[in-house]
Every structure is written in C-alpha cells, then in structure tokens.
Length: 494
Image 1 (cartoon, rainbow, N blue to C red):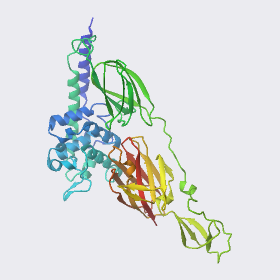
Image 2 (spheres, one colour; image 1 turned 30 degrees about the vertical axis):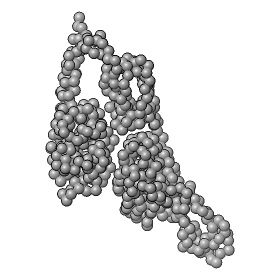
Image 3 (cartoon, rainbow, N blue to C red; image 1 turned 90 degrees about the vertical axis):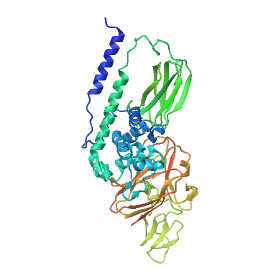
Image 4 (cartoon, rainbow, N blue to C red; image 1 turned 120 degrees about the vertical axis):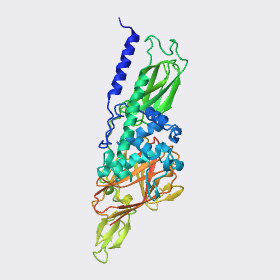
C-alpha cells in the first residue's frame, strides 16, 4: 500500500517534469497579440518581480508596488504580450538601472519611449513606471504606428519602435523570462512532502493567523484583474471582513485559519459567493462573469434635438418683403442668410440645420453613461484646472473600470476639420486613477490619441476630417471612479 507521502512526492515530480518540457514560444515572427505565457499561467506577476530582483536587484521599479502585475495588466488590456513589455523595459533601460533611464529617474522611462536622437520628446516623461508601461502598450495597440498599420510581430513593432530594433535581443529576453518562470515554479513545487494529515506547520500545528492575497479577475482565474471589486466575508472563526480591490486587482485579508466565506461583486459583473479552506498564508484568484450587456443606442439624436434653440422656426405664414425670408415661431421675418444660432440658418426662404460643432451635431450612437450637450449662455458649464468653459460636450464615464466606451457622430463627409480642446473636468480631480485615454477614430482609422490627467490644462485638438463619414470618440479609463471628459468648443468646418 502506497502511503500519502509517496503519492505526494510522485505528484510533485510529475508536475515538475511537465513544467520544464515546454519550449519557449517567442521568436522574431511571434505575433504580439498572442498572449501565450500568460493565458496558460506559465508567467505571473510574482515571476516578473523575481526576474527583475534576480537580474537587477537595484532596479527602481522594485520600489513601486505591483509592478509585476502592471506589466501583465497593461499587456492584457491592450492585447500586447506582456513578455514583450518586460523585454523592452530590460533592453532599453535595464529596468531603470542604465542609460537614459538611470540618468532621468524622474521620467520613469525604462521603455525608451519617445527618446529620439535629438533628445526626449513630449511623451518621454510620466509620473510612474507603471504609467509609462501602460502608455507604451496603449501606443502599440491603438496608436498610429503599430497595430493600426498591420505591424503585429516582434520584428515589425521593433522596426518602428526603435532606431536600433534589436529584435533578437528582445526575443532572447522574452524567452529568458519564460524559462525563468518555468524553473521557478518547478523549484517551488519540488519540496519535501508532508503527511497529508498534517495541516499548517510541519509539526501539525495551525498558525494563529494567516494572510490571504486575493485577486479578483474577469472571466477566469487567469483573466484581467478587476479594480474596485467589493470583497466581503468571514474567516475561519467567523470574523467578518470587507475590502475593495486596489489598482492591481487584489485585497489582502488576515484572519484565523479554517473555512472562510467569500462574496465578490463589481459593477457590471454577476456576484460570486463561495466557501474555501484557508489554512496557510498565500495567494488565491477568484473571478467574476460579466452581466449580459446591452449597448445603449440613441439613433439620430441630433435630429430629435432639432428644436433645441431659443425659438423653433415656424412655417411660411407671415407677410414678409419677399419669398427670401424665413419666419420664426413668433411670426418674425428673418432675412435669408441669417444665422439663427446652434447650426440653424435661414437660406433662400427655408430653414436649414447645419451643425457647426459637435455639441450642435449630437451623438448618433453611444455607450457612454451620460452625454451632456453644453451650449453657450448656459447655466451648465465645464471646469478644467479651475477655469470655466462653455459650449461643448461632456462625457460621463461611470463606475465600471476597464471598459471602453464610445460615442459616434455622423459627419457624412460634410466636414473637413475639427478643432477645439479636450481635458478632464475638475469633477474628476478627486479620483485616485491616473489617466484617461481618449482616441478619435474616423471610419475605423485612428486619427489621434490623447492621454488626459486630472488637474492638467486642456490640450489642443486639431483633426483632419476630410472624407470622414463617421467620427468615433473612444474613452478608456482604468479607474473605478466617475470620470468626466470635456470636449470644449469642438468646431466643425466645411
């Protein structure tokens, strides 16, 4: 009869053998949209952290909480293999210990991003290492030089990314991380087995307290993390706890060992409840399934709002000097060629509605929680960096993190140019989230992308709309608090 101890050893050896047989998957022709290594749990956040610690123990990235999870989250959100981001951080700046990165630590740029031959560019500095990693992943996914130009492989992306692509070096670092993670797991499993009846410490006693790190993820135990998820429950002695997952998607719970009860919930997800034996400190992964989502569609809203002026136009019933006059709702004669405001004009005796700004045009279709149209001379206003603005569109992105939302505007090729300003309203300034990414897309082609930060002054928008039939404004926000994006004086020109 084989005892439990022998069975445990056999299982450990079998798992260890399985872990070390997989060949590193990365090559210069590897498609970065393939998340292999992460969707199969070979590489996790702790592996990335250990990899940096072993090779570059003085790296300033190690001083930033959750940096391993940041690489993974930034990659998964943008469909860029996180190993490529790690390898880029190693090659370009040795994780902040060499070259330009080490000499400009306040820029938090170990990615070599926007460091040109003539010097740093406008995007080369940011306020955290994680924010720069997120910026690079986003640029590859939705910027104008990479995925949108059908550059998907390691070599294709690197040829555009750097003057010295060094694709083979990137691949070597990616495979180094893969092998390091495999070996690390094999070592962690290949430990002396204890009797199956012994629970807790080697002598069979139970620890007085255990600490659990619980990640809450989207869709599966290896899916993207969910920020702002609510975790409530009780420990093995019935002591209750309640916490919200942080920006890296986890909570840290301490309590008595035994059978713990959990309930996790988040906006837009179904609540998940379960019981689990927690007898040792460690890390667990829970996941939530998304609720059935229905897109909110407002068809031709700008037509429905066509009377949104101080006095709607009337029919031709008054006695006017000639047929080349329009009549307002009070029976007043308006001469042809008169601009009546908010896109209305009297042309050759007929009223025409010609929106001259996005706020006049209105959205055709949107999944944004709330859209406010702010006209001139309105009590409603937009405030950015303590400056009040009128005339524009304000998008409210509510309390569902990690969700792209958008608004469509039908242009029908009638405009040649869009100009104005964009920024985060001060109602967003108390939010702990770092940045919001806004992308303008014309007929499925990226026209421009803006990274907005609470408290910053608005930035100029100057976009060529020639031939564009549909303009889409995409908003991505990774925080779990309300966000207000202000599009100020967004003028449309013919």
